[in-house]
Image (cartoon, rainbow, N blue to C red; front, side, top):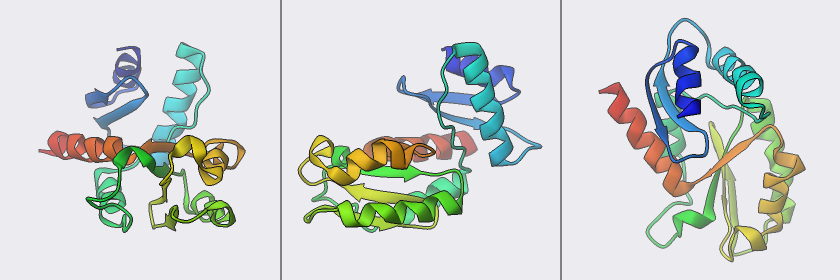
Length: 160
């Protein structure tokens, strides 16, 4: 509720939140995604006392994240498939540093809008996930595949 109110206070409309972990879909005009992210991060720090990376993606970018995931499939446990959202292409490219930590049958792919890490033995057992969720991923926010799909559906519902 606090996060929803914060977004409304920043002039966002059609705000819908998902879960209690900072996932939201909203409409906003007049500013770039980067500026929205900076404004939201500043407001979260000021009003809620929490400093977190904030990544804003358009509905079109989120559709690309869904469409370019070559790892997802019926045999893949969506709770073990992480999607790493980054603020820009430079940070996304920097995630290539994870590749040497990936141990088969784990899989790691960098797309145009996000990176994807499948942790076959579980996220807590993966050195690559530990690095992604730790220092290497400091400017990154991750969601599992199930949450990413729910956000995509919510963005589509908001657009309609």
